[in-house]
View (cartoon, rainbow, N blue to C red):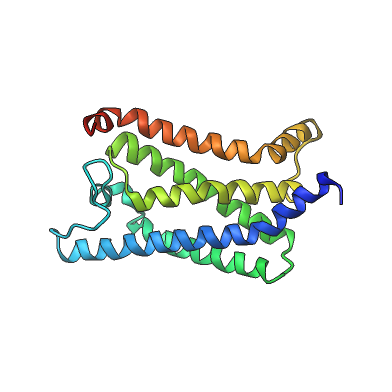
Length: 203
């Protein structure tokens, strides 16, 4: 089999398991945050284990208005979204044939998720000045979930780019690992730079 065909086939084969792994991490994180949120409502003095220091602090984030959307805690949306992602990944792993409309729905959900993730990243780092460790885990798995659903949809024509952008699609397919690493580096670099005063105080 030519190498140019083997790589996309391997990516397609790996995608269900990437989605399942991301969903499990997301579910565990959302459940832990939901549990801590309930405990905090019952006992304002409750301190969850993810309160590590003034910067890495769940409670600092939980008590803000950014921790909810339309009055519903973000963790509830996380439980719903990652449950759906787990089911979707399991269907794919089981060999289910999914039509273009469902892949488009997955693309919309992944795109909303990655935009929401960056909104929460900005709010946590630059407005609240604290990072919830469980939220950070969710941020880290949201990025590859979006990236690889998008890559799959580009490969199979679910997303149809204009002919003049075909080179962009080829570039992204070829350098998807580099893009993911660069994306992570930018996120971590912003965190490192913004809280540099705190990290240096630990030395």
